[in-house]
Each structure stands twice: as structure tokens, then as C-alpha cells.
Image (cartoon, rainbow, N blue to C red; front, side, top):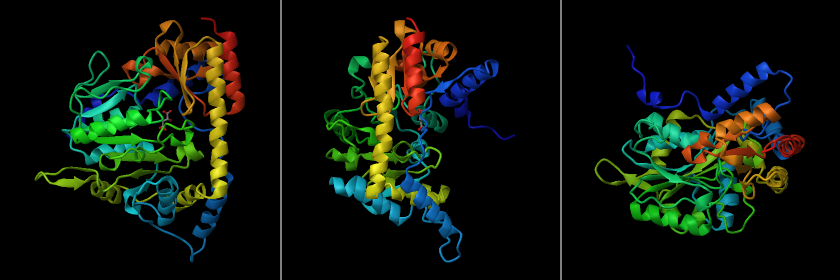
Length: 411
Ligand code: MLT
């Protein structure tokens, strides 16, 4: 009989957002008349920028003619997109990244989930608590953790508490770790790490010979000057950091799917005979073996955001969601609810009134005012007593949700 990967049995039954969708569907079935406003999963609602639509239409037409048709593309991504990414996000900002250090993919969820495959299973990982569940769950699946304990923590993982008490900027580990996951701007808390904090992380990684997996999927939402857009703005980061970027939240590509990962050749790990091996080469091996490239049409759409017109349209899109963030943040404050984030990120992280457990607050919002959010504890034990709302809804629904919270809930 075939045996299973028993590491999967260490995991909770379903992925966080699948569980939320299940609970919302059950409620909707019992209350078909409910006018539910969804501010749970961070999924965008506004149409793709016009430049992307035009570029993709053109690419579709090319695919319809023998002379311009394209089959398999380079697994790592087409040069036209890689060069646009390189120039706009790195070279123009004084960061030297080579074309063959950029890997285009179908999005950051896949990349942040798959990256752990190129690391040994004996590495110790550090994750913030709360955390985007993909980082942890994929390491559980790979066997890099022990069992889940009664306190909600997996054995063998270093958790970095990230709460209001430390301004959501976790302290450096007091023990040695090999891999550190950082997400900035942060999902779920919507907060950021300052240049100083990030410098301390890079220095720690250099000292400990560790690797930082830096998820910058929300970089386009940064408004404050002291927050680095890329970890490579920090001296020395090119020796220790892998960076993930996405078009999902920047340009509305959650359904279109495109992202990329940057692995400088200077980021290395220990091989069998003790020699230093480039993680970039392992990722290239993995990518070319397991992935056949992001669709040409999609890559043309992504390329278009780097034109002058594209940049304008993307800025408008980001501003639209950030205005929603402001409406939510200020509305919650007016309702007497303490809220964080929403200044450099599209997420608002609120403290539940009267220390209500996160899932109870989820039920209260769903059943009393028909609003879906995400319970903080779903992102880790330190998320207990917190709750996340996304600003990716449309304006009308965002305003209606805030009015419902302000007027219909009494704490
Ligand atoms: C979230 O809600 O946390 C996001 O949808 C995560 C993601 O982009 O996968």
C-alpha cells in the first residue's frame, strides 16, 4: 500500500482561507437573504489597468497568427519582462541585480511556498507570529517541523512574536536559525519594518550565515520614506536575502497570476562536501524542472505596467485601495476600536473589543453585521485577540461595512 506524506497529518484540516470560505458559505446557505460584505481574503476587486488589458489583447492576437504564435517560453520568464522589472525596481533605484537572478512565476504564493524545497530539511526556520500561513504550512509539509503543540506552536520552529507591545517589529532570535521569513509590508498586520530594523536582520543573517526570505508582495503600498521597498536597499542584503514580488496586489493580478523571485548569485548555502552552493542555481534547476513558464499573454500584461501610462494607472489603483484603508482605519477608530496598519499596506489589523477571541469576533461580525474578516489567531497564536480587514473591497462596500460596524455594533 502506498503510504502518505505523514507531515500533512500535522496540519490543521484546511488552509485558513478555505476554512473561512466554508464558514461563510454555511452561513449564506442558512441565511440566503444576508447581504454579506467580504473583507476577508486579500483579493482585489477593481479591474486590471487599461494598459494591461490592451497589452494582453495584442498578445492574444499574436497567438492567433502562425508568424507571431509562441509555444513554450523561457521557464525563467521572457527577457522583455525581466528587463522591465530589473530596470524599474532595481537598476533605477541603484540596486544591481542581474537578469539571470530574476525568475518570473505564477505568483508569490507559489514561490514563497516552493522556495523551501531548495533548503535542507535540517534547517531551523524562524517565522513571525502572526504570519502568512503559507510559510509555515509548507515547512510543515516538508517535515521541517515537529508536531503541533497544545499552545498552537509547532515544535522545532522559532517564532518571533509580533504584537502591539513591540510595535509589530519582532526582536532578533536569541538562538541560531538558518532561514528567516520576513514579510514587509506585513501580511497580516499591515505594519512595516524600518530601515534600521531591517538592517539589524541583515546583520543577524550575515553573522549567523542564515538566509532571509523577504516577501515584498505589498511594496507598492508603501507611502512612508523610511520603509525600504526592497531588502537589497540594505547593505549586505545581496549576500543573505531572497526577495519575492508580485503583480497581484500591485496591478490586480490575483486572478491573472504573475510574480517573480530575485535570488542573487551571492546567496549561498552549504553543500554536501562543505562547499558553498548558489541557491540561485538550485532554484533555476527546480524552476526549469517543475515549471514551464508564465503565460506569454500574462507576461505582456505585466510588462505594460512599467510604461509611463502603466505606472500612472497602477498608482491610481493603489491609491484607490489605500483610500479604502483610510476609511476603515478612521472608521474603526471612531467606533473606539484600536487599529494598526493601513498606512503602508492594504491591511488593517485591529484589536478585538473587550479582548474577544478572534473567532468569536469573526462570528459576531458575520452574524450581526454580515461582514467577513479574518481572525487574527488564524495567522498564529499571537494573533489571538486581533482581527484583519482588507482594503481590497470596492469603495461602496467598504463604506457600508464601516457604517455597519460604527452604527450597529455596541461593545
Ligand atoms: C491574504 O488574504 O492573506 C492573501 O490573499 C494572501 C495571498 O495573497 O495569498
